[in-house]
Length: 307
Image (tube, rainbow, N blue to C red; front, side, top):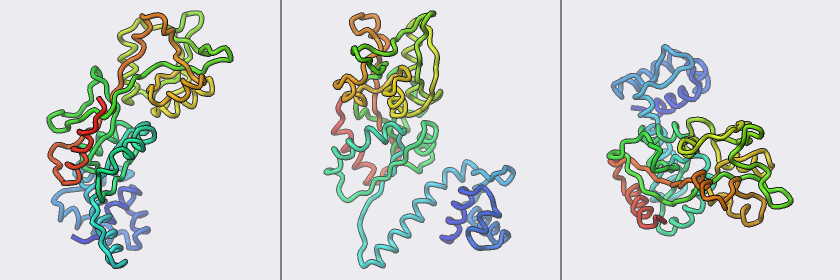
């Protein structure tokens, strides 16, 4: 097996086109095709589906992609370290994270655990729910940082993909406040005045959790005027007064304290408390991935859970 075969494979995934990748790799298309076939022969199965355009990966190709990327990264980083006269003994970890957690949760969490990690490099990739789950199950990520809720299932086999709860939060409906300190938008809406909703993209984890909240309540009148999978994007829209969004309480503490934002429900009416719900930050892993660096982070994370 040759290093250039791996680079050819990753180039083909990027372009989805044999001719374009051959040009980028500075070889003829027949030669490029032969190198891809040579890699597939070495692996023992097809890695790309040639019947589709653009070219797509087969299940085996998706499973092999992370390995190819890691091999290339390690080889080049080792070469550079040797050329510079030293070899750093760093372990590397890959974490797939939902966008909102990559922005709001991960930096603070890393600050907390970093003194205990030793000489290690962590790469975090912000992705949507489906991409994060795929990265974990196919092995290109060691961990998956996710939102969770006790009544909203995650389609991962718990016997193979265990998780720990790193933090607990609450998901609450919020609105910008007016000059009198009252919410500009109120929940629940009425037939005469439907609530203006800033919603999570359907299929995202936070959308599923909000759906669970709505399911246990009598649905009021509302209009959805904006959708985004990221809590930070919805927060920006709320701050501009465009409507109501369900946001993690920890993400809006400063805005609540300053009076910029407030709850869109009447907290003095106990029945409205059902429009809030608990929210978990979870760390998933593949059970049989037993590298020392993976086990070390799992042990550190387990010892510092805040629940």
